[in-house]
Image 1 (cartoon, rainbow, N blue to C red):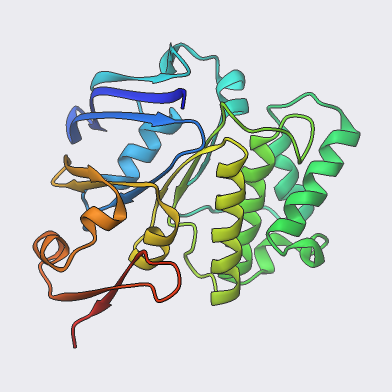
Image 2 (tube, one colour; image 1 turned 135 degrees about the vertical axis):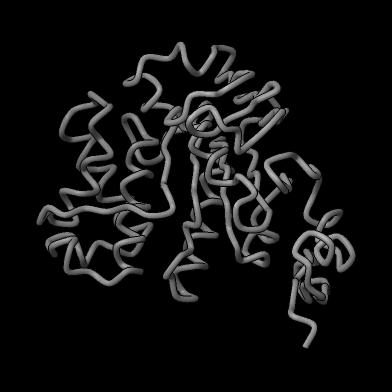
Length: 264
């Protein structure tokens, strides 16, 4: 498996104050990495640094063998798509117009753009919303539209093209989604990974994270606490120490990955 993204002694934060310190990480093509940790651990900061929105205070990020800071913005936008925890839009754009914003870094032509937009609207169950004003949608509908926008950004000329060399960064993508659309999110991420896309996502829902991630990067106090598989890390003892609460862990009855429950 080829390495797509490397973090080397990465520190990041704001105003010279580090929120993250000394992070080392290698991510391969088609890998799904889950970020796990309590509030304020640095998960969103790491995603912003990986997206190129936040310059490192120390160390570096390397995308496909080239320092991330050396990528021209448009070229980086063709390779890296980032969905932040909250996306605000005050203008009365339609859903179709919002999703089409994901095509701005590309020059594949109108026919390719239309095919990709149609595909991602279907994948996110937002086709029926295409003509609606984004500002009038529910929170869950807006989240699906924003997911469609970043999926649009990942593809250059076809919705079915291989995605090796692309990086998708998702910060709490299941926020406000109902159960059906959470499963749709899971299916979409798995399909992208099968096609070679590298995915890094932060989720407070440990069971969704367990079902999706090949590995978990555990952050605590801005430092790497552990990096291993969900099966190795999602234990009562480790989670109890990390979050300061008692939890029960049982294997999924069909798939075998760990499921986490409140003890009471």
